Image (tube, rainbow, N blue to C red; front, side):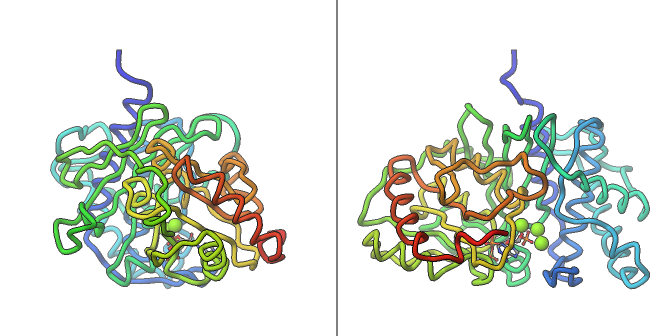
Length: 348
Ligand SMILES: Nc1ncnc2c1ncn2[C@@H]1O[C@H](COP(=O)(O)OS(=O)(=O)O)[C@@H](OP(=O)(O)O)[C@H]1O
Ligand SMILES: [Mg+2]
Ligand SMILES: [Mg+2]
Ligand SMILES: [Mg+2]
């Protein structure tokens, strides 16, 4: 008998790997919230949603993007590029573990209308019960545009609990001690079955296990964009903890992946106090990968992240992810610092 969620795991690996092959393209549109979205974001969400529709037709999808802007006249140029890119990825040869039944391989072209409908299948509002997938087709879009870190993120949830998480990080070195060496990693976790890193090419699986807390090497992984997390709160926490190593700044859920493999001591994402609510697709896959590598992921109250509240995590109490034996100590310091900082407690 196969392990629980073996089918979902194999599917998620295949879908994320295929989405990572989408030709890097930085043609950009600015969304209503002023954040950038590229043809890569749209094409990747279309691709994954088409595959999901074939593989698990009854499952619901919470995806970051929607096709409203593409349906508008002004989106025409981008739409043509997306049709080109998405079809290139859809029709690519089948690799090991890929199935034509998932709507991929030669002859799987889709029309612009079909692709936009596929993007919009990610419009589920989320919830506490049933089978659900959440997709961030490109997480860290700003990092992607800078040629730095970004991640293709796919998670499978049952009754609001993440069961499978896959991150594809095309620009991440396989070994951080060789920053100019081979790049392109996949991170895969299934609840209760551990986590592993695989080369994007599919080779060399390595089981992930976070090293124990060590005060002399401990440091933070944090956002590049100062608007996304309170870096000043991190600085205060850092000095109270007696941390001497500088933080590692990196876009996207590659931060969770690096933490899981021991490149960095904690991922700290404290709210900036502007009322932003964290999105489930920005944390679902990464948090499981960290938990299955020996970490704890909580908010600043020490509570687990709640993926059953809808498309967001609800009121923003930040995210603290670190190895098990450091979590209680870090939480204590975070609470000491945030008790004096009203912005962290501001209602979203
Ligand atoms: N104000 C604010 N606060 C917190 N988070 C925000 C905010 N605005 C946007 N976002 C989300 O941040 C996602 C990428 O952030 P990261 O921290 O991973 O990368 S970065 O270094 O900040 O670029 C980014 O994900 P992508 O849109 O997928 O790139 C957003 O979902
Ligand atoms: Mg975005
Ligand atoms: Mg994101
Ligand atoms: Mg995104």
